Figure (cartoon, rainbow, N blue to C red):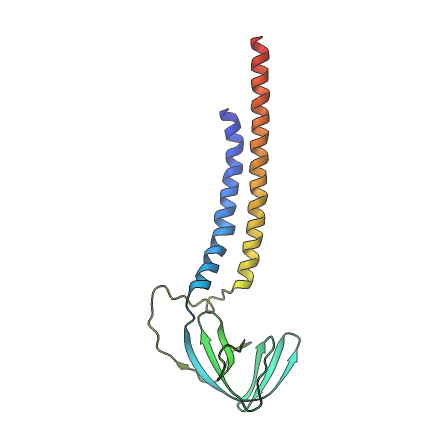
Length: 179
């Protein structure tokens, strides 16, 4: 019986290792990212919207102050005021001044000025954008971790089934010897 336990212990250890290394960290980061409040640390004037032109997954937005390249698409009404903002969750974004829900991530750096907004510096405030942590890769890592954990769990289960069959064979052999 102790021999059978020794065979399944490394498999169980492998399963626990996979869960601790590949499932818990992305899950924890995703939960932290979800529950962390959005904090705007800097804002700046980006001028007045003139036009936008898309090329692949980038959009060049022409404003009265220059051209700003953003990821994805961006649209606004002609003459609408635009602003830049830096947040802890999304990094530097170009937004419509009247609708801060309509924002696009700025590709590259901004050479203009941004005004800092004083914020209380709490120990639990994490600047995810500064550390380049976003949910896209975390979801992929979590999915791979879950699949790997399921594969490890199947390996553990097959090891336990093998141990049970070996134990049953040992019991049958002991029973045959006593007869």
